[in-house]
Image (cartoon, rainbow, N blue to C red; front, side, top):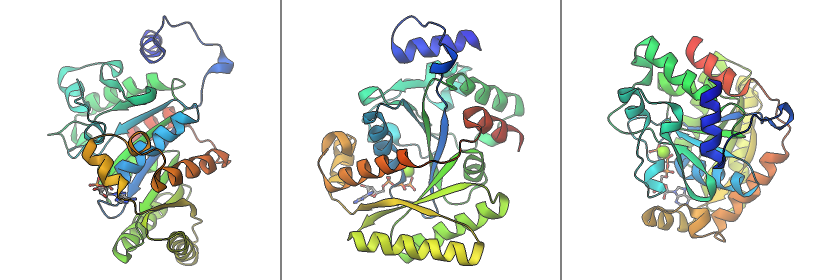
Amino acid sequence: MVDQANQLREKMIGKKAEKPDRKSVKKTRVLAITSGKGGVGKSNFALNFGLSLVEQNKKVLIFDVDLGFANIDVLLGRTPRETIATMIEKDLAAQDIIEEGPNGLLFISGGNGFNDLFQMDDLKLQKFFRELAALQGEVDYIILDTGAGLSYENLRFILAADDVILVTTPEPTSITDAYSVVKMVHGKDPNVHMKLVVNQCTSIREGQQTADNFKQAAKQFLGKEIGALGSIPSDSHIPEAVKKQKPLLLAYPKSEAAVAIRQMTGEFLELRMPYKLGLKGFIMKILFK
Ligand SMILES: Nc1ncnc2c1ncn2[C@@H]1O[C@H](COP(=O)(O)OP(=O)(O)OP(=O)(O)O)[C@@H](O)[C@H]1O
Ligand SMILES: [Mg+2]
């Protein structure tokens, strides 16, 4: 594992790795981006929030765990050399599947034709997640772009992450589905930290009102505190960036949505969220819970 961590470090910082001193070892936080309803903007948010953290000098890896419908690579206009699917097929190491995207953003692509990681035999599953343990301390954030809804697989990722960012739009269907996610997750583990992002708002007021109503319902009916991370306006620059296969933050850095995501990132970095067990805790929970 030590050798592998060194190889990873070399790959990430592009020079011969030296053993880091203990003070410089980062705490790696795992954030799961999820939603109840599909198509609300999770993948675009995960990618641009990740890039915005990179702008704040954070080392970030986006891990596309929407297996079967993985599309972070498509949003980046990249064809990955290897994916989670081929890693398992060819028995590759973690460093073989980590790709470097724009501005040093790292990503792991899910790959297609692969839709049930947890159906894999136990030894393969353990090997896969133990490989990822080499990333501990090498990146500040691992952002999981999950699929929508309450699949068994999604729930496992959500319950194992340090923080969960729940994306909704102001539409009632999206809000009720997001609420179902909170209810299910809270029922399984009341200590999961969740923050709400309201995407595709027509006004700041609409974003605030949606978040306030959601917060109130979660508090009243579940006794769960869900703070809002912020809202993102409906902005045609997002579909334009998707068509160009370039992240919004790079294609349209001054667009309204890009400005909102940067502002949210600033606020996110100010939050004093309790640090759980990071990547190692994530792996233990994924494997043994
Ligand atoms: N703020 C926004 N303004 C306008 N369009 C948006 C915004 N956010 C996302 N979109 C559009 O919504 C669509 C869905 O976005 P995205 O793929 O990020 O959603 P998703 O939640 O990851 O979907 P899935 O559940 O299928 O994984 C895309 O066509 C994107 O261009
Ligand atoms: Mg998606």
